[in-house]
Image 1 (cartoon, rainbow, N blue to C red):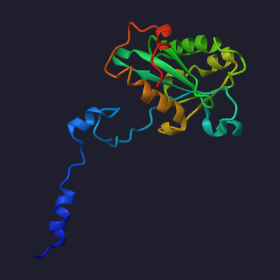
Image 2: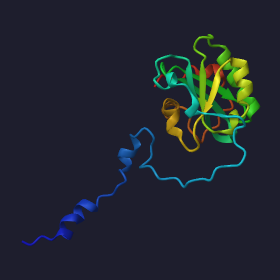
Image 3: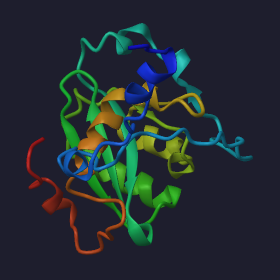
Image 4: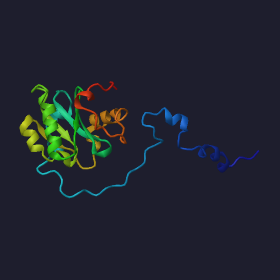
Length: 192
């Protein structure tokens, strides 16, 4: 019996990379595998007077003190949005319903939510490069918190928040509109 390299590699290589439908049904994200996204050019405009994440103090990076927050938006259908703010050390999460993604609306809603917290755990906020927080100076003066912005196309700099958003997507799917959800009912989501 003669074996060649080609005959041996056929059974190994012929198996599909995609899991079966039965396996896919039990995965948390319900997708087969990740696809690379094309690189997008930077938009003009940006954040006026934004402070880079690289210029923040070193004590924020070691996650020893509570009060340093990471924030982002979860967007659903019909421009409905929910702001998620996660503490870097305790992973305490604050959810806030947003009417639209305009900077004034987002900033006003974030100020209301952060003022409900005691003064001690309000030290700094790290946000991505979205224009929804371009009114960060108003947020800083209203809450007495420094605001730092991530580097462009670097979501891993908000690791806690990105992980929390992925877990929240189980209860708040992308294709669903959230017009009936109120900020008070967001706190009743099941713990992940």
